[in-house]
Image (cartoon, rainbow, N blue to C red; front, top):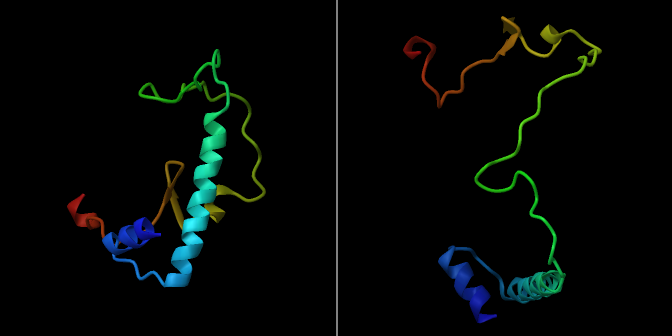
Amino acid sequence: MDDVRHIASLARLGLPEARAAAIVGELNTILAHMDELAKVDTDGVHEAVGVGAEGLPVRKDSGPPFPLARSLDAFAPSMRDGFFLVPRLSTHESAEES
């Protein structure tokens, strides 16, 4: 329980005493689950493909397009060259700067 209180104070979280006890129980349940997963025999199991520095393998995008119930222009106020035009966010550069 002291560890939970300490981490909460480092994160500057207000943690009521009753909630701290509940969090200890939740964390213990998670750690028990991780212990069970660690017992699984993974010898001879290949790593998941696409996980790691190489990224996910890319395949050719093929096949017929699915017909839409509405036209594309029904999804946005305006379009140009097949792309949706949306208003700039206030946190981005203005249209004059680009």
